[in-house]
Every structure is written in C-alpha cells, then in structure tokens.
Image (tube, rainbow, N blue to C red):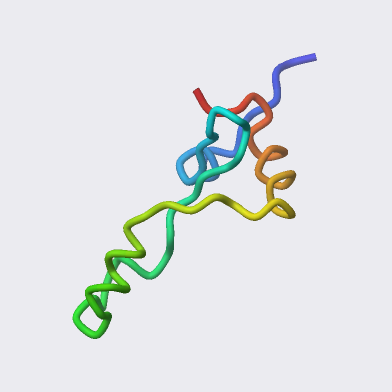
Length: 67
C-alpha cells in the first residue's frame, strides 16, 4: 500500500502545536486595509487555534502531520 498524499493547500495553511492543536492564520488581511482600524489589523496578524470540531478534518487532509 503506498503512502497517502497530503493535501498541499492544507499543508501551506495549517500547522500543529506541540500538543497536537491546529494553528491557522486569519483572513481579511490582504487588501483594502485603509478602511480597517489599526486595532483590527493588529489582531489579524495573530494566528489562532482551530476549533475542536474542525480539527479532525485537517488531520484527515494531513495524514502524517506537518514537519
């Protein structure tokens, strides 16, 4: 049985913490930044932990994790 391929788009978007949680980046940070407040843009820079209910979907896309 050959190894499963990981979904390359998910590989670029998600990473795992040491405890197995999934990190993701925030959306809405790429254009039309003049109408967004400084506070909002600052918050969007920070990554977030993916919700527990979506973790299984990402782990299915990345069967061997991300090195």
